Length: 510
Image 1 (tube, rainbow, N blue to C red):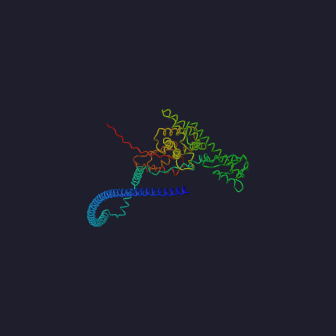
Image 2 (image 1 turned 90 degrees about the vertical axis):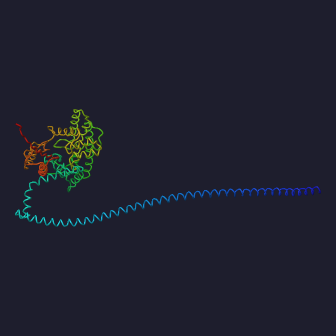
Image 3 (image 1 turned 135 degrees about the vertical axis):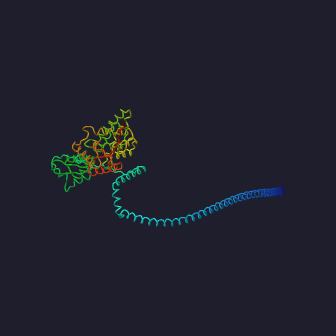
């Protein structure tokens, strides 16, 4: 028991001793930690003080630099303000001088205005006095003198008007060639009557006259439907076993002819059947046009044509000029131009292409007013043809002056193809009458010596008396003859009026 007590006492004593020792150690550690903390705080305070001093120094330096920059900027602005004040003062001096000058000029103008008004009054009184004296000396009034003066200058009016026309034309050409000119319409109604009947009318044979009533239909519904769909005129008259189709558009006329023939063959004629046959005929004619254009390009050896040009070229299959098929005429011109180019040592490709396309405008000239050469040139230009081809198309009837060899070749080939025997159908009597009419119109004017109708009536050359017609009178004469031809004649295309005035002086040395 005692041993246990001693053991417990020992343990208590050991625990107390250990607690005291550990307490001493902990106090010592806390003291050292406090010392370290004080030292760290003092070091931090010193470092903060040093940092604060450095920051203050940097701030002072920055403030000094900003002060220097502000002073420099202030000096520059002061200098600018001073310069501006100097310029303002100079301008004020200039304005003051100008004001003084304007005041002086205003005073001078006022003085001159008074002088002008005074002299104007003096001049009016002098003119009145002179007029009265002239009337007294001439023994006539001012009205009589005016009438006499008008009678004297009456002969010069034509020359003066011609000179004014010539000057205005020259001035207008100098300003971008804006001279207005009369555009000759190539509409079919301008063509001679016989030729119009041949080129704008087709006839369709019918088995019997009983079909005419069926074509007209109840209350005319069939013929109205037919004309509205095809855009042509269907003429049903007393001509036995025949119906006439009339249209200025050759393609529409061909579609109408095929439609009517198919209806007559089928026997069923009513609006629905008419529309069905019209659609079939349209598809057939469109295919014929495409095939004709492609075949013509192949026959001429012309490649890479725009599909719209091929289609337009194919439409010429149904177009005639004085009975000559225009598509065949174009192929002839292409071949002739190619041969002539080869003979001249030139590349025939461009000449053949221009020759094939030269009458392109005739396919659409019933839709657009103007010469077919200009219409065709515009169409080729829109289809990205080369400028040389476009110029050759535009110049083949001298609507513009030809400036390239290809244009001259196409012009010559066109004339050869149209003039060859059998190419065009026109009665000799009507041809001679047209030429005689042209010469009669020209010869009816005063001062005309001789007249020659040339180039199948496309040009009239008028020789005048040089002592009666001056150069100015020749301009007026050409205009008057052209105007009279337009008023009194019907003709295709355009007619060139050329007035020639020639004077010669001859002497002999003996």
